[in-house]
Length: 438
Image (cartoon, rainbow, N blue to C red; front, top):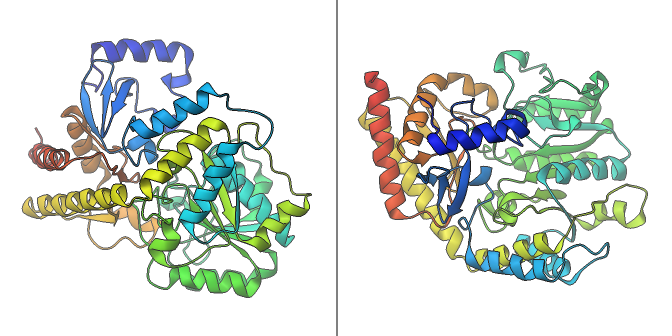
């Protein structure tokens, strides 16, 4: 029996007649009987076309930090829409939002807006290559940096078995349609292995334009950096005059107000931001230090975007940051997330199931298996079949994390204590049913 009710199924059939697989992003496709169609969201919940309510821990894959339909953000966007939004010139709201982004993050000297996380990382990599005059990029296994060719290698969607030896990792292509020559410009390394990064720099540091990294693995259980790892990357990038890019599309304005730089105490040369920056509205940004900004300031390194810094995007970012900077939303996020992490681990222990929660209270995953998770290769120890069975049971009961364990549970400020209590009860019931084979 699939997840779709009668009206949701009808709407999915309509979607399938005009959208490939009924979706506009392949990550949303769960199969013909389980792919959902949502009518609306409110606070920490979403409602399908049958009117069934779900506690939403997908939060749009991370953008919803305040809650669905947050009134002040919606009002700011409505006001901007009424005054027109695209002018082919810099606009007032864009400047106001940029000032708030830089003040909130604390470390950048300059920034530019763009529309999506994919665009942000694409522009960041081109800028890094332009200012260094080098071609090679280092990324880490299990990390996802968007849908452009230069980063679609060894992402969380590839089989661990295809990554080759840890000492000589293979950049495993994540999609057809990428020219084979692109592979020569990318080096993929295990996360949290500073020795291998140092060896790579010794061998070809003169060719490395940038290290791009999610400071925690946003598409692989939320695995955290070990002490000294990010600091080591900072040291190596300084030594070799390589650009250190923090991809904070998921962590930015979520794991801390100042993002991963505040959370982990390491400052990059560039940062890419999206998702929580607009509480669900499409907005993204590239932020950087002055020496990197010089590349765009002098010209010759292309960057453009018709809708970059639009009135709607800028209004959403400005209003979202105004609320986040009060401190209360992220305080609630951390309290809720920690209560869930503690409660989920207690259920696992009570049921005698080996497992733990991994990540940060704002975005974490549930790992079913033994040992620690330090890098993407460790995810092979996870009981994927059991987890998926439990999660689909939970969704049928009205609690909706992503059924793919690699994708974190996202917490928003609108989740309540009642949501936590219901979630823990449903998790316990679903786990018990799964263990019993019911």
